[in-house]
Image (tube, rainbow, N blue to C red):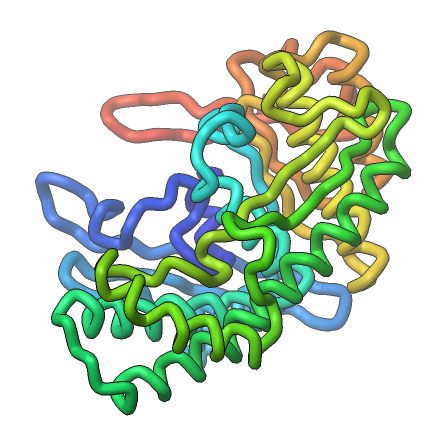
Length: 326
């Protein structure tokens, strides 16, 4: 259910599954999700679907639309158990986490990311084929530089807003100092700087068979502000608390910027949280006024919410799932 809701936003959803990985087997049936979404300004009917051999389609209010259009209607943030190792694994996961936050603040961020990645794939093909003609590279590198500068700017802006907002909830969850870092401390971040770096790096990139510099090599670091402790050195529970702090901080900043909070998906959120911190989380969520979907292994994990929430159970009956209100 959480994955279905997450597909009302741009991208692959919280499980990062491709469209053809979500088809029903062995029947080989496609899938479809429909939703009625009410924003402060108006209501929307959204449909997104995919056939077994086709790309994902989006229809908004009866008209075909791009996935990017979803970002303006249903800004969304989520936490799943797989993210618990975010601070101690590779930079790829942290970049995805950061880009999800940046997308919530800047809906056009998804388009810039797609433009950059497409141009970089084409440039990498030229590099692997040992193409040496500068004319083949210039147009691609110009596209990469323009999109790359916007990506870096959006990421830095999102981190600054989230870091400031985590300080507002520091009594319940740790405030974090966030930084955007690069493999090369002198990595260019402006459009002109990236154009020059791509041109100067062609020989080394050709030897490696891939682009070695750019925002695709960036990373996000976090430091527990009160303890001056890097996130990767914190305990498992502290790392979870930092992640929750970032999600809540991002939601508060978005509410301030856009006038409405995002939809928030929290899978197995009670894990690693003691009773006091669970209660604090639920209070902050209710104060935020966001629509939040949380899952857990039993209703007792959400007892502190009391009548402030609706509770449902998903039961398997005769081969089909049924949602029952508790």
